[in-house]
Image 1 (spheres, rainbow, N blue to C red):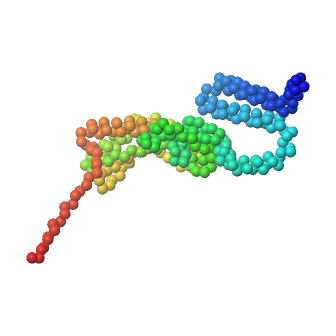
Image 2 (image 1 turned 180 degrees about the vertical axis):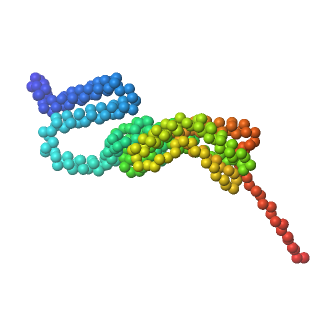
Length: 299
């Protein structure tokens, strides 16, 4: 019995297994302690999230290196077999490898970060998590009008960034240009209409225009892009049915729907106060009379 116990205790394979288990426990404890200490000094939600992901990755890498060192004496004779097996695994797991490479590109290439609003492969939503293999989105739109959540959580493989365009609504310029159009009858007061639209847009959109201008100036320093107008602009066009007024403006990408609601509410109130000087137009159809038809009959 004692010989069996001694053989078990001093068996090199058992010793390496015990060493690996102890190393795993140490790595897990160290990672948790580092996360706990880091959370005390980092209060920004985005930075805290990135550091937690980085610490997890470093902990996994340390354990993998320790595992390779522990069994390094057995790897020499298996080099050919491991090479062939590795080639087969690489072929079978090419999507996983591409997704891992995509994760590195996302983290260090500035494609997007958590909190950004993106569109990936026709799926639009806010990024709520970036994993090693998949990016998780809280989807917006689809059967819901406007930029509102519909309740679905979508997970997309990170390899997507190498295959199709990535649309980011909030990277360097967290604003979008939006537009509303008003059909006004031909007998309305056009000057008063322009004055009302200009006043309302300045009252509601001035803060967004100022912030957008600052961000756009930063864009000009970073990219080769032409200067653009971020202040509200009112334009007019005439067609066969009515005079069309357009209000183009910049707005925070997350407040597009609420700002449009405020604009329309104020516009309707102000136009109603004009007592008929400004009237909305609607599509009209003119029915052309049928010319008389003379029917002759032969008796």
